[in-house]
Length: 210
Ligand SMILES: C[S@@+](CC[C@H](N)C(=O)[O-])C[C@H]1O[C@@H](n2cnc3c(N)ncnc32)[C@H](O)[C@@H]1O
Image (cartoon, rainbow, N blue to C red; front, side, top):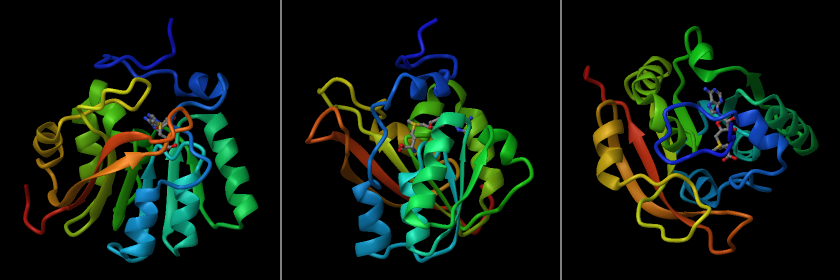
Protein backbone atom coordinates (compact mmCIF):
# COMPACT_ATOMS: atom_id res chain seq x y z
CA UNK A 1 0.00 0.00 0.00
CA UNK A 2 1.29 3.47 -0.84
CA UNK A 3 1.92 5.77 2.12
CA UNK A 4 1.81 8.92 0.00
CA UNK A 5 -1.34 10.99 0.55
CA UNK A 6 -3.53 11.06 -2.56
CA UNK A 7 -5.90 13.86 -3.40
CA UNK A 8 -9.45 13.19 -2.20
CA UNK A 9 -8.52 9.90 -0.62
CA UNK A 10 -11.02 8.03 1.50
CA UNK A 11 -8.66 6.86 4.23
CA UNK A 12 -6.12 8.44 6.52
CA UNK A 13 -2.52 7.90 5.41
CA UNK A 14 -0.01 6.14 7.64
CA UNK A 15 1.45 9.38 9.00
CA UNK A 16 4.26 7.78 10.97
CA UNK A 17 5.42 5.95 7.84
CA UNK A 18 5.69 9.31 6.06
CA UNK A 19 7.98 10.57 8.83
CA UNK A 20 10.00 7.34 8.75
CA UNK A 21 10.76 7.98 5.07
CA UNK A 22 12.74 11.06 6.14
CA UNK A 23 11.60 14.66 6.34
CA UNK A 24 8.12 14.96 4.83
CA UNK A 25 7.44 17.89 2.50
CA UNK A 26 5.55 19.89 5.14
CA UNK A 27 8.20 19.61 7.86
CA UNK A 28 9.78 22.97 8.66
CA UNK A 29 12.99 23.90 10.44
CA UNK A 30 11.30 26.92 11.99
CA UNK A 31 7.75 28.13 12.61
CA UNK A 32 5.28 29.14 9.92
CA UNK A 33 6.02 32.75 8.96
CA UNK A 34 2.30 33.45 8.94
CA UNK A 35 1.99 32.28 12.55
CA UNK A 36 4.88 34.55 13.56
CA UNK A 37 3.18 37.48 11.81
CA UNK A 38 -0.11 36.83 13.57
CA UNK A 39 1.10 36.26 17.12
CA UNK A 40 4.40 38.16 17.02
CA UNK A 41 4.20 41.16 14.71
CA UNK A 42 0.48 41.89 14.37
CA UNK A 43 -0.50 40.50 17.78
CA UNK A 44 -3.90 39.51 16.47
CA UNK A 45 -4.13 36.83 19.18
CA UNK A 46 -3.10 37.29 22.80
CA UNK A 47 -1.49 34.41 24.76
CA UNK A 48 -4.16 31.92 25.80
CA UNK A 49 -4.84 28.20 26.21
CA UNK A 50 -4.11 26.61 22.85
CA UNK A 51 -4.61 23.23 21.24
CA UNK A 52 -2.52 22.42 18.17
CA UNK A 53 -4.02 19.71 15.98
CA UNK A 54 -1.41 17.54 14.25
CA UNK A 55 1.64 19.41 15.52
CA UNK A 56 4.14 17.25 13.59
CA UNK A 57 7.70 17.90 14.73
CA UNK A 58 6.63 20.87 16.80
CA UNK A 59 8.09 24.01 15.19
CA UNK A 60 4.83 25.96 15.57
CA UNK A 61 4.07 24.62 19.07
CA UNK A 62 7.48 25.78 20.24
CA UNK A 63 6.90 29.21 18.69
CA UNK A 64 3.52 29.52 20.41
CA UNK A 65 5.08 28.59 23.77
CA UNK A 66 7.86 31.11 23.22
CA UNK A 67 5.14 33.72 22.79
CA UNK A 68 3.65 32.68 26.17
CA UNK A 69 0.76 30.61 24.82
CA UNK A 70 -0.15 27.64 27.04
CA UNK A 71 0.17 24.96 24.40
CA UNK A 72 -1.11 21.40 24.21
CA UNK A 73 0.13 19.90 20.95
CA UNK A 74 -1.21 16.56 19.74
CA UNK A 75 0.03 14.24 17.04
CA UNK A 76 -0.50 10.56 16.31
CA UNK A 77 3.00 9.96 14.90
CA UNK A 78 5.50 8.73 17.52
CA UNK A 79 8.44 9.76 15.34
CA UNK A 80 7.11 13.29 14.78
CA UNK A 81 6.57 13.71 18.52
CA UNK A 82 10.06 12.41 19.30
CA UNK A 83 11.42 15.19 17.06
CA UNK A 84 9.02 17.68 18.66
CA UNK A 85 10.16 16.82 22.21
CA UNK A 86 13.79 17.29 21.18
CA UNK A 87 13.02 20.63 19.52
CA UNK A 88 11.17 21.93 22.59
CA UNK A 89 13.91 20.74 24.92
CA UNK A 90 16.58 22.48 22.86
CA UNK A 91 14.51 25.68 22.81
CA UNK A 92 13.60 25.44 26.50
CA UNK A 93 9.95 25.84 25.50
CA UNK A 94 7.25 24.48 27.82
CA UNK A 95 4.92 22.55 25.51
CA UNK A 96 2.59 19.78 26.62
CA UNK A 97 2.98 17.24 23.80
CA UNK A 98 0.43 14.43 23.62
CA UNK A 99 0.89 11.32 21.49
CA UNK A 100 -2.67 10.42 20.58
CA UNK A 101 -5.33 10.39 17.93
CA UNK A 102 -6.66 13.90 18.35
CA UNK A 103 -10.23 12.65 17.92
CA UNK A 104 -9.76 10.42 20.99
CA UNK A 105 -7.92 13.13 22.89
CA UNK A 106 -10.74 15.61 22.29
CA UNK A 107 -13.32 13.41 24.02
CA UNK A 108 -12.11 14.48 27.47
CA UNK A 109 -10.18 17.70 26.99
CA UNK A 110 -10.95 21.36 26.46
CA UNK A 111 -12.42 23.74 25.72
CA UNK A 112 -9.45 25.82 24.54
CA UNK A 113 -9.31 29.55 23.80
CA UNK A 114 -7.46 28.89 20.54
CA UNK A 115 -7.26 25.91 18.22
CA UNK A 116 -4.39 26.06 15.73
CA UNK A 117 -3.63 23.88 12.78
CA UNK A 118 -1.13 24.02 9.95
CA UNK A 119 -2.15 21.42 7.43
CA UNK A 120 -4.52 19.36 9.57
CA UNK A 121 -7.88 20.55 8.24
CA UNK A 122 -6.78 20.42 4.61
CA UNK A 123 -5.59 16.83 5.04
CA UNK A 124 -8.32 15.40 7.26
CA UNK A 125 -11.28 17.00 5.41
CA UNK A 126 -10.50 14.66 2.53
CA UNK A 127 -11.56 11.60 4.50
CA UNK A 128 -13.28 12.71 7.73
CA UNK A 129 -14.83 16.16 7.53
CA UNK A 130 -17.84 15.40 9.75
CA UNK A 131 -15.65 13.90 12.46
CA UNK A 132 -13.37 16.93 12.25
CA UNK A 133 -16.24 19.41 12.62
CA UNK A 134 -17.61 17.45 15.57
CA UNK A 135 -14.19 17.51 17.24
CA UNK A 136 -13.75 21.26 16.60
CA UNK A 137 -17.10 21.85 18.25
CA UNK A 138 -16.08 19.88 21.33
CA UNK A 139 -12.68 21.54 21.86
CA UNK A 140 -14.01 25.10 21.51
CA UNK A 141 -16.59 27.26 23.24
CA UNK A 142 -18.32 30.50 22.23
CA UNK A 143 -15.59 33.09 21.68
CA UNK A 144 -12.82 30.54 20.99
CA UNK A 145 -10.58 31.27 18.02
CA UNK A 146 -9.52 28.82 15.34
CA UNK A 147 -6.52 29.56 13.13
CA UNK A 148 -6.12 27.18 10.19
CA UNK A 149 -3.37 27.37 7.57
CA UNK A 150 -4.79 25.72 4.47
CA UNK A 151 -3.37 24.90 1.02
CA UNK A 152 -5.01 27.16 -1.58
CA UNK A 153 -6.64 25.95 -4.78
CA UNK A 154 -5.03 27.23 -7.94
CA UNK A 155 -1.39 26.54 -7.06
CA UNK A 156 0.15 25.08 -10.21
CA UNK A 157 3.47 23.99 -8.76
CA UNK A 158 3.62 20.31 -7.91
CA UNK A 159 4.54 18.85 -4.52
CA UNK A 160 2.59 21.29 -2.37
CA UNK A 161 -0.13 20.75 0.22
CA UNK A 162 -3.65 19.57 -0.59
CA UNK A 163 -5.56 22.46 -2.16
CA UNK A 164 -8.89 23.84 -0.98
CA UNK A 165 -11.05 26.46 -2.70
CA UNK A 166 -11.98 29.55 -0.71
CA UNK A 167 -15.70 28.80 -1.10
CA UNK A 168 -15.24 25.26 0.21
CA UNK A 169 -13.46 26.54 3.30
CA UNK A 170 -16.25 29.03 3.93
CA UNK A 171 -18.86 26.36 3.35
CA UNK A 172 -17.21 23.77 5.63
CA UNK A 173 -15.69 25.78 8.50
CA UNK A 174 -18.32 28.51 8.26
CA UNK A 175 -20.80 25.97 9.67
CA UNK A 176 -19.17 26.48 13.08
CA UNK A 177 -17.16 29.70 12.91
CA UNK A 178 -17.33 33.33 11.80
CA UNK A 179 -14.37 34.42 9.70
CA UNK A 180 -12.18 37.17 11.15
CA UNK A 181 -9.92 37.00 8.11
CA UNK A 182 -9.13 34.75 5.19
CA UNK A 183 -5.98 36.00 3.52
CA UNK A 184 -3.28 34.62 1.28
CA UNK A 185 0.09 33.56 2.59
CA UNK A 186 2.87 31.21 1.44
CA UNK A 187 3.48 27.79 2.95
CA UNK A 188 7.25 27.45 3.40
CA UNK A 189 8.71 24.30 1.91
CA UNK A 190 12.12 22.73 1.61
CA UNK A 191 11.04 21.63 -1.88
CA UNK A 192 10.42 25.11 -3.25
CA UNK A 193 12.06 28.36 -2.06
CA UNK A 194 9.02 30.45 -3.03
CA UNK A 195 6.73 28.06 -1.17
CA UNK A 196 3.11 27.30 -2.04
CA UNK A 197 -0.09 29.35 -1.98
CA UNK A 198 -2.14 29.04 1.17
CA UNK A 199 -5.11 30.55 2.95
CA UNK A 200 -4.64 31.87 6.44
CA UNK A 201 -8.07 31.48 8.05
CA UNK A 202 -8.67 33.12 11.41
CA UNK A 203 -12.12 32.31 12.79
CA UNK A 204 -14.13 32.86 15.94
CA UNK A 205 -16.88 30.69 17.33
CA UNK A 206 -19.94 32.89 17.67
CA UNK A 207 -21.68 33.50 20.98
CA UNK A 208 -24.95 32.11 19.76
CA UNK A 209 -25.63 28.41 19.03
CA UNK A 210 -25.12 27.23 15.45
C1 LIG B 1 0.39 17.79 7.02
S1 LIG B 1 1.05 17.30 8.55
C2 LIG B 1 1.35 18.86 9.34
C3 LIG B 1 2.25 18.78 10.53
C4 LIG B 1 2.59 20.13 11.21
N1 LIG B 1 1.40 20.86 11.55
C5 LIG B 1 3.51 20.94 10.38
O1 LIG B 1 3.12 21.99 9.88
O2 LIG B 1 4.69 20.53 10.23
C6 LIG B 1 -0.36 16.68 9.42
C7 LIG B 1 -0.02 16.15 10.81
O3 LIG B 1 -1.22 15.72 11.43
C8 LIG B 1 -0.97 14.50 12.11
N2 LIG B 1 -2.26 13.80 12.21
C9 LIG B 1 -3.05 13.40 11.20
N3 LIG B 1 -4.17 12.81 11.66
C10 LIG B 1 -4.08 12.85 13.02
C11 LIG B 1 -4.93 12.42 14.08
N4 LIG B 1 -6.11 11.83 13.83
N5 LIG B 1 -4.54 12.63 15.35
C12 LIG B 1 -3.35 13.23 15.61
N6 LIG B 1 -2.51 13.67 14.64
C13 LIG B 1 -2.87 13.49 13.37
C14 LIG B 1 0.08 13.78 11.27
O4 LIG B 1 0.83 12.84 11.99
C15 LIG B 1 0.92 14.97 10.79
O5 LIG B 1 2.00 15.22 11.67
